[in-house]
Length: 245
Image (cartoon, rainbow, N blue to C red; front, side, top):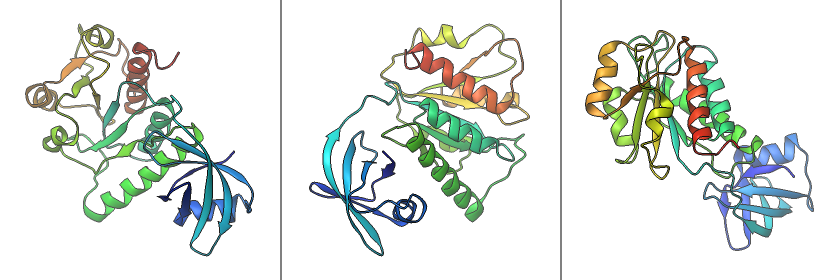
């Protein structure tokens, strides 16, 4: 059955509006009586039947409610340095499929992409749509949040105070990700700070260590592209906690 993000949830009923309504009607050409699945980012999903198709909405009757165990136990966030082209979109799409809880687009000194004002807001809106589509495709019940583009000083306020911050850094030669995770609690959020194409300046790493209590870690002896580092680190953390089988 096709999956949709619920626009409004009622008593034994929900509605699809806007792009979700258009996708059901115009793209998939579903009709009254067809079965679908809806989710509302609370962890629940609903098997439903299309009851009514109107100009502004689709009304669906709920047949069954479930709470599938598809979300990662440990909430893992990526704070990713802005990257040019489609690299950010690729990280968001694949990160969502793997199980990340959210992504913070981070301004860094060596970032090629510069985003400010309305241009930044428009890009975040596009990234959130990509995350939403990937959540549907991977049968998740919570789509990752794409935060507003932020500077280093804004990072700490975005996540819970118990968040454990890690920063993969090519000049870190001794501390590995696996060794650090042994001391972490799976119940606390983890944030991975990933550099842009040109990597971090040393001052940025020092700032993260001082203000976020971040630990610099090595991802191995080879230099990874920004998008590779992001997904490799995410995969290693999820695997450590048994989320990837």
